[in-house]
Image (cartoon, rainbow, N blue to C red; front, top):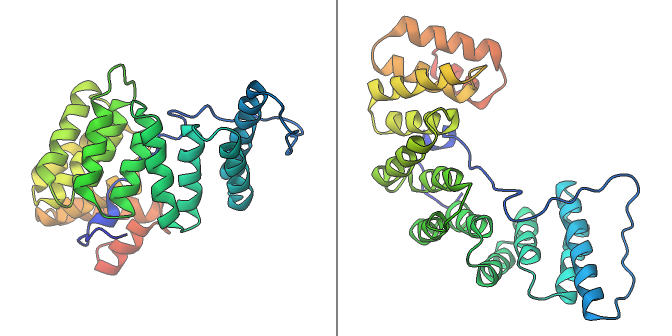
Length: 267
């Protein structure tokens, strides 16, 4: 990942993708026709493009990137101004490691749909986590957040905070606290607040957020147990640190967090 990160960054909560945010998921059951007849009218072209888009999404979900690319490119031949096809093509290029092709596809989708939060989110996430262009990415996240009647604004706050965490932790905390005010019982938001507090050396505050996270989860995540163990160790509470470490290793023995604790000698 291009962004310069410290040793704790890889243990922060992952990005939340808005997979169904602007794209109608292809619900395809039974046998699927994978070819589309040659359209004759403008309406036929639009219908064919929509079908090829759905097929492209389906192949993407199946991780068949070659077929997904073929269908999405065909959709754009039939309807060049279809923003969702450009968005999905960006995802396909990104999955294939073709970043120089992914960026213009994402950018074109935003140009065609500048009021679609999901499309903007994808481009912002690409800029931040693939290109390391944090400031530019945050401008797009903010653009998406400002769109009214946005039911997924908290997910955008979460992703923006994840993007800003390394370079501007205060801004990241602002995003998260705004999200928490609207959704106080969201464990993902609480966990990221705990991770951010830990990263800043605020171990008591980290403990508060992480214990709240534990209370909101049916089962504690590896990340939660790792950060609780690490926070207690930093606070000098060896017994509590070992108890959380034991839970982590017992429940998730092969997780990266468990391996990290074992490498540190805390178990």
